[in-house]
Length: 458
Image (tube, rainbow, N blue to C red):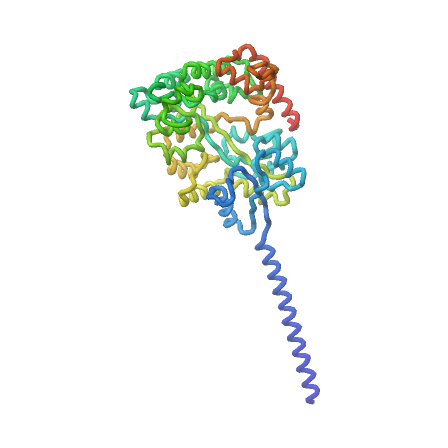
């Protein structure tokens, strides 16, 4: 009997040990599964907007906030992508090391090189994407496909030093002024001997003038092609030339004339009350708010059209996590939740400020933004954003060649084969007459446009 009880006892012990072993294995398996879920996926992102590692940067703060909101997604900043940006991306692509999400300087280049995936399936199901201005959505659609996600938006135009005009008993320029009123405002405020100039520089005029003078034209005349032989483009060159040759722009003053001004460059002269109207973008508003000791406002470009410019993210065509990559790109760019968080973080950290304006026309987002950014002219300009003019460098095929890089075959100064940019600059300064070459450069610009259209399969 004792022997039988001993056997039963041993059997019970072995059964208990086996059960404990099974439970332990089950718990280990459960723990293993739990750890795997908590680790989630890792995606990489590269952007020129992250600054240097260790510095206080709003976009780096946004990455941390994203991971708090999405604990199953780990985000790593790819510091290996750097200037020259497109060469760095090309090197990463050839080595099979593309970041999942990356800033793209020229969207058609990314498409032509097959760096970016088609994100149409994501944006078609995204109601917030439909809140982007129609002109923006059109600009990044190629053959009914979308390959990029807007990451930031800025409004371009002029800022006015209101104090200077009031002190001179002159009408203060305002949003919606005519081209003639703009020219008068620039000339009338100028008094070089007293260290006051009308404009910081005139080089942007040939780009915005066509859109200001004609509803049928865009930035640098672009509207499904270029019209550089048009009266609007030639008149823009002429206006810029008149401002420069009459001494109304700081950038073209002589050293002796610049000595009358308080500052070493146009930035300092503007901050020291020496420039009446300054060309800039809304990325500068934080600096103006912190450093300008005069009353200023945003007045855009002459007429009632608003000019906007963007940065974009591409999603790698080789990413293994497209949904997570899209969520990150949206959070960092046009998404409502992301932009509301961006404003919250900017409120909490005094070393950072908002750069740019909201991408989506969501009332809650806009109300929150303009509560923080009290610039009346900017708020009025934003009201016209649905019909905005797009600054086309990052989205338009061949634009870099058509505006700056393409050799023209024209001799300018020491350049036997001046580029488009050099010829236009020479015309603005009065060294050349653009009318002599208008037809030639228009053909060249449209040729470059068509060549890249073909390269991306349009």
